[in-house]
Amino acid sequence: MSEIKNIIAEGKSILGIEFGSTRIKAVLIEPNTFKPIAQGAHEWENRLEDGLWTYHLDDIWSGLQDCYQDLQKDVQNQYGVQIKKLASIGFSAMMHGYMAFDKNGNHLAQFRTWRNANTTEAAEKLTELFQFNIPERWSISHLYQCILNKEKHVTSVDFFTTLAGYVHWKLTGQKVLGVGDASGMFPIDSNTHDYNQKYLEQFNKILYEEKMPYTLEHLLPKVLCAGDDAGSLTAEGAKLLDVSGTLEPGCPICPPEGDAGTGMVATNSVAVRTGNVSAGTSIFAMVVLEKALEKLHREIDCVTTPDGLQVAMVHANNCTSDLNAWVGLFADFLKAAHIDMDMNTLFKTLYNEALNNGAPDCDGIITYGYLSGENITSMPEGRPLLARMPTSKFTVGNLFRSNLNTSLGAIRLGMDILKKEHVKVDKLLGHGGLFKTKGVGQSIMADALNIPVWVMTTAGEGGAWGIALLAAYRVQKDKETLPEFLENKVFHDAQGSKIDPNPKGVEGFNAFLERYVLCLGVERQAVNCLKR
Picture 1: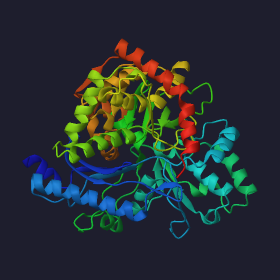
Picture 2: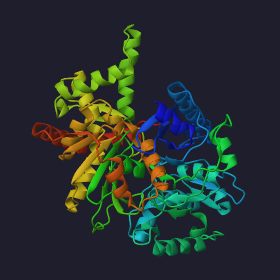
Picture 3: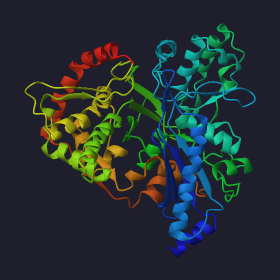
């Protein structure tokens, strides 16, 4: 405790902050073992306004400030000191989306998050033009859709970026982005670690034809790799982050990254033939490739690691949100019945009931946790849905096994494509909210993907820890590669558990998946018939 207190007091601690879909989290680490020593958090929710998923700018800054103050309280309570200096900082956030600004820095249009699927026309046209998959949630899809829609603001755009890039810009004055996050804005050339020049030229022709007063190079943030100089905390930035005025400016800040990149770092999955699955509000699997995929697949994104290696990304918009809503329903029942049970216990009870007493095929119960549209299954909007056979055993175990299975349904379909492309994965690591109940999400994922799944003891730290590690890498004096830094200094003594697929579980999940695919027509009819 005394040693950590001195580290904080002397300004040697390192801070990572990540904006997740439902929580902003801060993790403070010490510079020797890189282990967390304090944490802070702020709960927030996206809003559905005018048909678009968004957060207000005020939500971003009040949330960040509250998260940092919560961290300060934790430091004060544990160590009796305040954070006045930091060795380095990193910021990360949900990838993709659209934040556009004019030449005076004014925000031009509603912040559109990754969750929006209103850019189908733009994404399809760009994919056809580039012969490279451009998903609906990518930033370039949002910009082009705004142009196609002839939105008034598009002629005034001077800069557009992601949420992480926006926060970093305001705290440092630098319009930059880590290569991993940038690869979710526009395709990256893995040889140059910069935007693909051929595709830039093709898009610039579109801009010329649409009479836009700019080229794309002018609008995009500068691309940086892990360890690069991304600026430092300005005096204005320090006041924005710490409203108490205690934090001093001047500390270096690493390139801002997306949650996919920080998930790779937090699971030591940045080397070739490693992979990880992040399972929370959305779910995505990242596999670092030995070579480029041979074919264009609309279900697979091609992005990069924070140091620029090519990655196949299978992304599904929906994972635990509806699952959490079902847990909330049981919590409401307990409250109505005047039964006291905390949420952690309730989650453990329901998840373990699913694993231990739910049929692997869910006995004919089919659910879709689609709160929003789903690209892998070509679903334009979301309608959470439950259907079952009259003969199905409608038990708590079967219901929650179905909810857990369906949270992995879309991602399984994407992973099947990678198998057909002969992509090799030596190790798959899981992290995120799905794995908080020990062994349950891990077991069901192993069965769903038919591959051993590892969960490390650090998995619960998530992306905030991952961006803190990138902040630490930014100020490391040793000239190691990012995989060497993680392997030799961070994870050399990492503890974790491995769960192999259970043959009966694999068979059961395959039977569930068959119904999942057959019943997509029912989900599509729900979208068509159940209107706001």
